[in-house]
Image 1 (tube, rainbow, N blue to C red):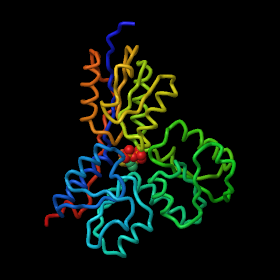
Image 2 (spheres, rainbow, N blue to C red):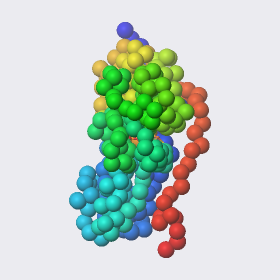
Image 3 (cartoon, rainbow, N blue to C red):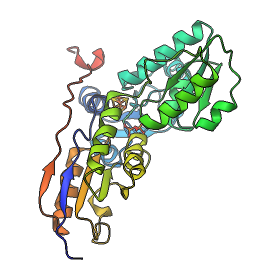
Image 4 (spheres, helix red, strand yellow):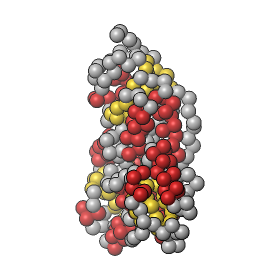
Length: 312
Ligand code: 0CM
Ligand code: SF4
């Protein structure tokens, strides 16, 4: 089949307010304190973002023990357990907390529920740093649920239980798990709907619209980015072939063979610069028209930590 594919861009896509803030914290910390600045865990789950900041003087580590005494350390957007805050304090490290305020909000909720004696369910993905950070807000009585099947294995106090969620879950998967939970524990407390953030919700809505009009969907994002993986899954669940790609180098003529309408979106941690590079590559491979879908405007902005905004 000889076709000239067109490209449709999802809207919104790419950076969210929490990612903007986290990157700015690292950039400003380097300006204010000088390199090197230590960052515990990838500031956001994107290889390009990490490499760019590394070139400017950020040193990425997985454990606080790797941060030397007297250094400045930034905590990633995904948040950290209380034990890590305490260890940093005990060592006298200068901490800049880049945890997304929407993740911090869930941390506070978990602490409050624990103080009030609730058994807490955390709906999320095992091993993800946000899940470790949120569950690590309290010493006990918090249980991870990853799937609908996990709900059957819970033994909660039916009169005093509550749930919170990871911020980057699939909206549809989370709803199904919450339905199971409320069927088993009718008195369970929870947020109005879930703790999925506005950016995750909007990007999933946008990729659904996109997939409905395309025969191939490309999602720009790194393999460890939860929200980016969910975008690919949402498109695939609608029966549209969908690929998660790090950047334009993943694309060959084979990837887009027979596609007439290619949908393109980007996870919350993927820079718009990569969207431009992928578009340029698609044009090299023969794509013609490029159009952007209409979408909701996002006006969310978060303030920076005071240490970085106060005059020296
Ligand atoms: O949580 P996730 O893996 O999607 O993280 P990310 O760094 O890709 O996206 C932004 C965030 C947060 C918290
Ligand atoms: Fe915050 Fe949502 Fe962005 Fe994560 S994806 S950093 S929770 S706004």
